[in-house]
Amino acid sequence: MSGSLIAAQLVNGLAIGMLYALMAFGLSIIKGLLNIPNFAHGALFATGAYVCYGLGQVDVPFFLCLTGSFVGTAALGLLIEKCGMSKPGRPYLYQILFLFGVAMVIEQLLVIIFGTTGVSFTPPAYLGGAVDLAFMQLPKYLIFCAVTGGVAMFLMWLLIERTKFGARVRAGIDKREMAQALGIDIGRLLTVGFALGAGMAGLAGGLALPLLGASASSGNDMMSIAFVVLVIGGLGSLYGVVAAGVLVGVVQSLTTIVAPAASTLLIYVAMTFVLLLRPQGLFGER
Image 1 (cartoon, rainbow, N blue to C red):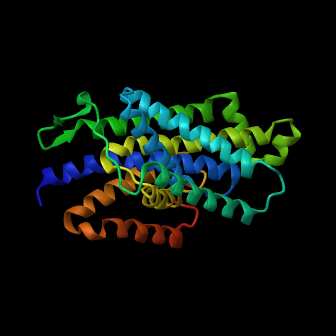
Image 2: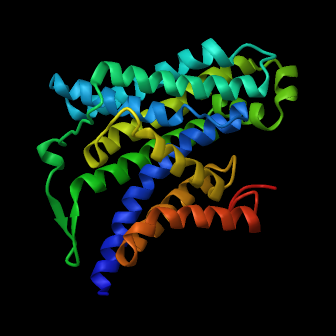
Image 3: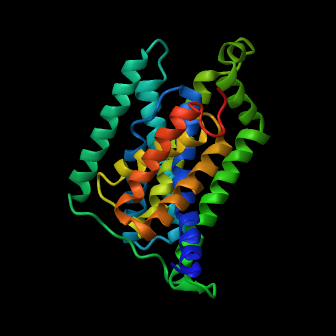
């Protein structure tokens, strides 16, 4: 096993890990605000991929396609939250089943609109080709995915950590009753937070489209990995999500060198050990 091969897989794993982190980042925002796992997150990922594909078919510039993926799924997330999540007094089980039902409805709508055959997308010419790193040829599109995902998460982090809106979001997560007593509109925060989390899933879908293609059910596997990243990183820890996403991507990429069939299995094994040894995750609070 050559050192150049290991280095190449490390770089590939870092790029793929940023996509995992981007997907899990949105999931973490929704989990932190609503305290429920968003079982429609995978369907939102697939929706973002198809929005990007549909806009690309009418010759919309790729950057605008990605913007459409974020905005379109954010709008869908806003509708989902308003229709079934925002009314007070809804039991936990109702919310879980509602999101599960939404996921199935979205998947079937994608089948009706786009058919059962998966679609693919070729990135624009300026993102084609590769960069010579001496020890490997790194595709430009992987670099673009890693940079775009990192910038998107950084901007979301700035919004949550450095703005008045973000301060209210953190207050709503940590001390909801106190925030309500101070006059903060928790309902509006939940709606906007759900929309932002959904938009992140859609952006991840748009970015992943040239790499993985898209089908109505393509979000299922990505949602499973996003949950693994969320558990390993720690619930509520945005830093942990990024670190765990990169870690999962690198481990999965390195495993393909020696045991390609076990690359996905290994991340679930890692999640199991984390749950046994540190249930709050690597960066989460007990």
